[in-house]
Amino acid sequence: MFRLIHIVIVSLFLWANTAISQSLAQWAQEFPKGDFSQAIVPLQEIEYDGNVRDSIPPIDNPKYVNVQQSDQYGDFEPVISVTIGDDARAYPLQLMLWHEIVNDVIGGKPLLITYCPLCNSGVVFSRNLNGQLLDFGNSGRLRNLDMVMYDRQTESWWQQFTGTAIIGSLAGQKMQQIPSRLESLAMFREREPAGLVLVPNNPNARPYGTTPFAGMDSRRASRRFSKWPLPEGINPMQYVVVANGKAWPLNRLKDAGTLSEAGLSFTWNAGRNSLHDRRKIAKGRDLGTVLVKDASGADVVYDVVFAFAFAAFIPDGDWMLGN
Image 1 (spheres, rainbow, N blue to C red):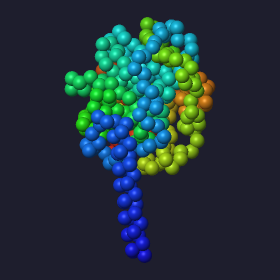
Image 2 (cartoon, one colour):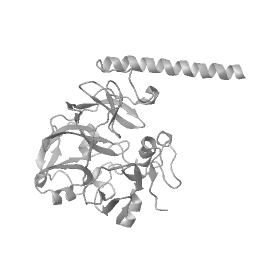
Image 3 (spheres, rainbow, N blue to C red):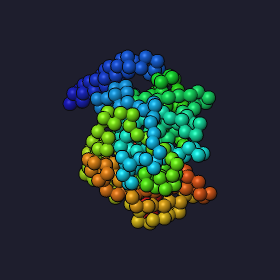
Image 4 (cartoon, one colour):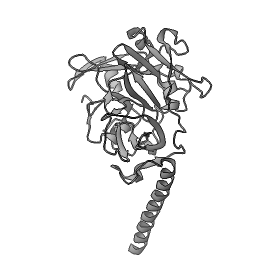
């Protein structure tokens, strides 16, 4: 019996190493500038789900309309918004879910707007890293069900959730996060009446306005999303607001309306469609918008994600359950 177990363990080890070798060969072919000998995460954690380099195409030449002419979107359209000085822009999730990456310049600053629909993470980063200007594409791979990006200059691989390079010559480097909001288009329009809204370069390129993730935030989570330990009463597909290494359940903030805790203030307002509810995003249920500010009243970096993603990437983080 012991010999049989030993043979199985050895076989699994050899299979895993063979799979990694085959992956490395494919990666090196797709990313000839990449240095896969440098990594800060186990290579076994990289997942392949059928996509390859830029099969989810980033947007490099974004097209905009004034928010007052953005009638193709509903008032409750969920958008990632960024304001730098007098330059305010909104990125509808119905576009971001099909492209996931926008290389942009806002207020004179080169920025990277990202969205991973599998974990609902929308984060904005500076593309200026120690004086080097980077631009990004999609590796087509996942880690912990989160998008793995790559920069075109070194072809290092980056974790979208954290903005950290995990493989390549820049492994260990971290991009600066820029405060942004996940809000409704109506809220953005009211605050920034001269703002710009992203529109498709080719309206027929994708089935914009619909989502392949319908029902994802209401049905029972599959085993794929249930690998990480969660507090009692928290399910993997529950939305949480993440800031400063802590997670607040969205439902708690909705019930409170306003909340001050851990040096932050939260305000929940109704009127933002779920991307993960109905096939037509405009018919998705109302999740509302949460604004997060510091003691001075300034916006802080935050994210609204599924609970499994917080558990996967911040395993020692604090769960702010209010118990």
